Figure 1 (cartoon, rainbow, N blue to C red):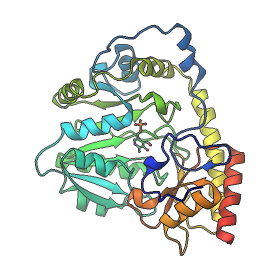
Figure 2 (cartoon, rainbow, N blue to C red):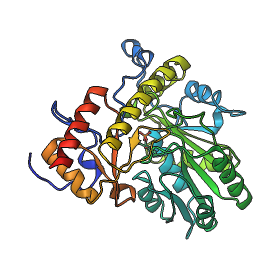
Figure 3 (tube, rainbow, N blue to C red):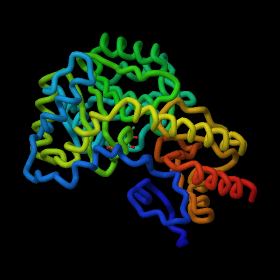
Figure 4 (cartoon, rainbow, N blue to C red):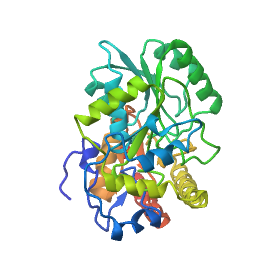
Length: 354
Ligand SMILES: Cc1ncc(COP(=O)(O)O)c(C=O)c1O
């Protein structure tokens, strides 16, 4: 394999991976979407522009999933990615600061920069929020981003912590962007949904329903002025979200809880297998409560070297912790079947033994 230096996730995203590669890279589920999602394809015949805010059937179905919500409070977006981008830009104010977790989902600092605002970080402790530190940083900010369960740590924050953040931000009039894309992938307890007048909930069909490529997500907010700004910006940027993706997402909203529970069981088995495998190799890693990531340290090794060596010499894809604001760790996504996880562990062992 030609030895190119790997400096960003874009090196791997969307690439065909070849039979012999084991990818712990991209955070995209390998499980298929529920069949009703693609059963619509043979008869689907709609090709015109859709509503900028999103198709009514989908928004109506989404509103039923949230307490006291109305379809007018939703904007359907090109994945959670567009929802994050539009939200930050709609809340822009000269000199305003945005408080991000660190380690963070790698797009967050770029989203803040593109919205011409400044970043402050609250550092996580083995994936968990330290409330004192959070408040110290957040009090200087107009917006905070909460991501629970999180990428890249897999950590879900305690419900008490989330409630305290909710109250703190409400009292201080701070906006919360709650990135909930892993809300259904949580193993230890029910998810707790942050609520409030200045809360923007961001979600997506990418992870729960394995529909990453269809780019269907949404934001839900209660502030009419904010919603109007978002719709206006979307009118002059991407316009409506792909209407086929929306129709498929609408079908996904009808999927039974049993289906989601079955999927969760598979994810949990994989987490346990991979967690035990990595700890068995002597790596420093915590057991994540959600999402599908593990974030180990390789003692005595630089993560950039680990990512390059594993890819070029062992055909294993992993993501460099530097991309997530964590210069000592390497991110593994376990969106792979058990056989591949086992083979991947063998290759990592081989690498460590050398
Ligand atoms: C925390 C987080 N937020 C947002 C996204 C973007 O998701 P989407 O595919 O819906 O744009 C991802 C994707 O990995 C993610 O991990």
